[in-house]
Length: 384
Ligand code: NAD
Image (cartoon, rainbow, N blue to C red; front, side, top):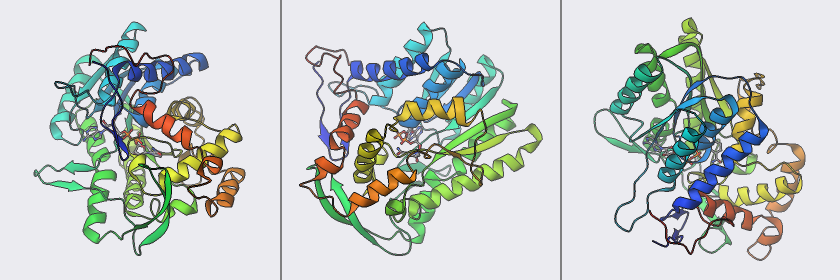
């Protein structure tokens, strides 16, 4: 089949198997060129198929020489419908890892469920004995709870509505958006989906099953960003979930001190991923950030971020006063943020190409789904 991109708003409903393979190959090549560091050899990644989780899986495999178990929720191909990008990424990663002599086993299904936790625990027991590192990189729009009810997360403000510029991803037009206020129930549900409860459930289940190694490390990912995004992110409904995630890190480290567990939050850079494309205002901010950081020679993608996290920040225990790893250090540098603040008020539909890196944004967007790689033949028939 010839596979073409079908973009609807902030999502692409097709994915290219060869392009996804190329994306994984490039991320692996980056790590191979950078070389190895000392680190855990048995790593579980939850949310391992795209974005920061996939990059984490690649970085620990090729940066530590680790064996990995990955959990993700992806769709396989059906009839003429392609599989999701994460499904192709996972298949490609497993192949590359096997060729290079690394164990890589993947589970596809609902990471929030008890059944998934049990399956993974069984795999750790039979294949490894214990796991030394757990990366929690799940980003989901909803969660089905143990009692069968499903709750959804929202991307809204807390307290008062917020109006600011945004980019309409269908037309590249700069428009205004008013982000509505989340009510108490929506905030609570967002915390249920994107907060630390499920991370804690995983750690507890692993520890109770005796498969969490002494002195294990666990990480979850967060975002802070500059003032212009605070109303929608840091201080918004998603920010409440991220506060809960942070509190969970503190709680887990304390509660599992007996086995020496260290739970950390890594605050990562704003990047185009399937999750961030859905947030109002953030894609416009990302296009400005890309422009400035590329000009300053500071731009990183998911793999550069995660390689730096695992082989530098985490190894050197370089943390801020609240104990967080700060991979957003370059994004939040004064010279970067001053430049963005200087153009934020000026940016319009007419000059967005000048002030923002719209092409870079879309390049990353298409590549997430395996398109726009110069060395992939998109005219060729592919097995989906
Ligand atoms: P992503 O959409 O690329 O990845 C999400 C992953 O979660 C995928 O592997 C997906 O399969 C998996 N997933 C979703 N629902 C699942 C379920 N029910 N069961 C199992 N797996 C499931 O997102 P991302 O941007 O890489 O986000 C990962 C983390 O990084 C999130 O905590 C996010 O808040 C954080 N983060 C993202 C950014 C950014 O700019 N993208 C910045 C800082 C922090």
